[in-house]
Image (cartoon, rainbow, N blue to C red; front, side, top):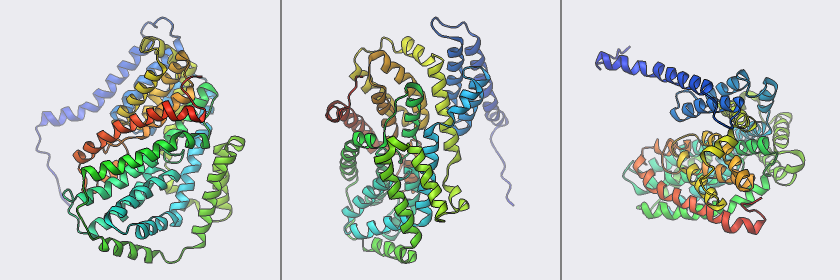
Length: 477
């Protein structure tokens, strides 16, 4: 047993330990002040309480003083406690369709990973299409993106990381010095980030945004409509991402035979494809087709949960096998986020914020759309994309009404850029996983990531201005 002695000055130790209680005490004082200050003109008492709750949650989300899920639970407690919404209305919102869609998507993705199908597909594609150094990078990049169409980008990054790490070791690449080592992990991280915005399945942020849209306006965005609107943006970013990676870090290896030895050994350990892999693959394929063609009729959550039931009826999974893949913290976080968004809207707080803060901002829908998407990309580099959506979307929908912008278009302006985080490891787990390899430094990620962020913003707004009208979408109602 080892004993560590803290040699720091006593005053410093006491000060550091006192910071947390001081922080929460100051937060309590702020909350009370916002609750009981004279209500500004045009703001209802319920709206004032909603803003006070929102301010506290905003600070907690930015500071990470509490886990995101706990902050959302805190919002669930405060909203009915202070009468912003009734208890029945508050807890009914937690049963939003988006929450159950996210739950079903987690379980389906977990079944695919548990069966080994996703690992088999990944290894086979890398081995078959990665015949040269350039093609191996491209296969990892496109594979990470394609898998992120179907499951959480975080799960894809975690699944592919050991394989990419073994390839790096097998090629004797020096961490932090090898350009090819950097490329391997950039292709993993950026592939996941770009692919993660292509469908509802790459992350829970899009279902969350659509849940807020539905609760506040009654409108929704269908699975197929979202793919049609966003997929050209994804294709353009894949081209841009590959060019930027290889420009900043030119390939410095010529032989990757050792990488194929690593992949071959991993494939052999899997053996022949099993009945479970076939069956889970068929269920997942049928589910995706049902989302695309039957989503409007039966609902995305209904289809997802029906597929989950089918997995258990067919004995393709057991609960103890699947529960490790279900992130209950995310479920709680998004349920609370939807409740907070609804509280801001139904209490009139969102409209008041729009009129008082952004009322004279701009009369141009195009400028407002562009600025909000830029603000979203900037914020998502520093905080959870879910928190960004909860902070910006209710106010943005209120602003959309004021400027006669389609609320669905404004939802895209927040939900899509919120997933395009390329610069820092704290922006998304995919970036953090890549940096944890030690082949990429934070400086490396920031250097290329800044350009990708700017390009992402430009591509998104160009698509909104010129492509969306061609498919019947637009800024205006």
